[in-house]
Amino acid sequence: MWLLVPLGLILATSPASAQAPAVTVFPECEIDLSVISGLPAGAEEFTGSSFVADTAELRCPGSAPGGALQLRCTEQLVGWTFGSRSTRDFRCELTDQDCPGITNPSTADANNRSLTVSADGLVELFCTRPSG
Picture (cartoon, rainbow, N blue to C red):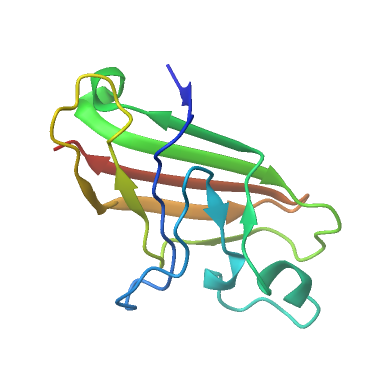
């Protein structure tokens, strides 16, 4: 079961080699497409700044397979003409502070992450990390 994120979600994206998060999200899920390399000229409209996703869903450890904290965010881009694009080379930091039953919240980098844009402009960000 996916839960809509009410408050307290922290997500950060930047190239995996960077030390500091490029984006901190509280309470929304913010997406930065500049982490996708190789975008052609004309894509600056979509990479000049981050945007807040239409949908942000958090699956807490108690309801996720294997006890993982999972985040899924989606957004439909208008005017995207750059084909299908994806990356796994970014930082995604998640906190479990809003999950029921968590008494000692923790924040950690996701060990599984993907950012995809379909040919018709549907953006999906997906990050998971073990609980605890």
